[in-house]
Image 1 (cartoon, rainbow, N blue to C red):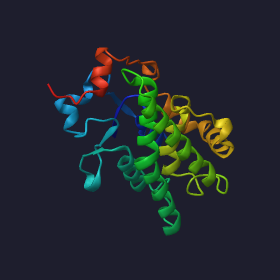
Image 2 (image 1 turned 180 degrees about the vertical axis):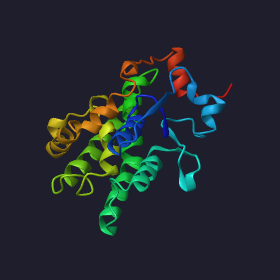
Image 3 (image 1 turned 135 degrees about the horizontal axis):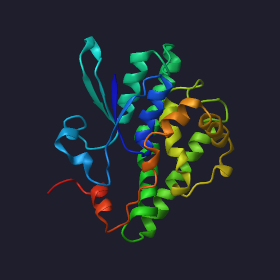
Amino acid sequence: MIDLYFWPTPNGYKASIMLAEVGLLGNVVPVDITAGDQFKPEYLAISPNNKVPAIVDHEGPGGEPIAMFESGAILIYLAEKTGQLLSQDPVVRLETLQWLMFQMGGLGPMLGQAHHFREYAPEPIDYAIQRYTDEAARLYQVLDKRLETVEYLAGEYSIADVATFPWIRTRKLHGQDLAEYPNVNRWYQVIKVRPAVSEGLSVLAESKQWKAQPGTPEWESMFSSGKQ
């Protein structure tokens, strides 16, 4: 059995979608990041970086429990555990890992900054809004160029797509319109109707409308260091 420690964020959805894709989506443990659950000692023991998602696989390597944090590492772990969504072909595998790292190191962090400065900053900072909105557009263009010649990011559906899709769902928060990226739009429309994607996106559906306005306790919980 695998426990999924989750809150409905783009990174959280990576794990819930992946678990659904490989048929292992089961026990979900809510980690309400607007209430500061991510700073509780019992969660930090699983996820030292106090971010969601995390998992605990009670049947890990050698049959022993193992805790995993960092969404990219979780995707690789689940792919290797199940033999799904990470090709054994060396070339395809490397393509998959490259595009996964593109999401982890570039797309996710930069889109997150665009979202933050456009929606969450206590006061508007024109330079930051322009800087990260422009960078978001550049990264969408990289995706669009890639998807001009392949159906999925690594050629075949993989953990690279699972990692990237939840971030493109929030495109309006990045100041982007899929009408400007026809290849990304084609890819997005195909993925969003996958049954496992729908299942993964349904996790904690009742919590999807959470808000965190500047100056509120929810905002402080999300953007504080957790230090007392």
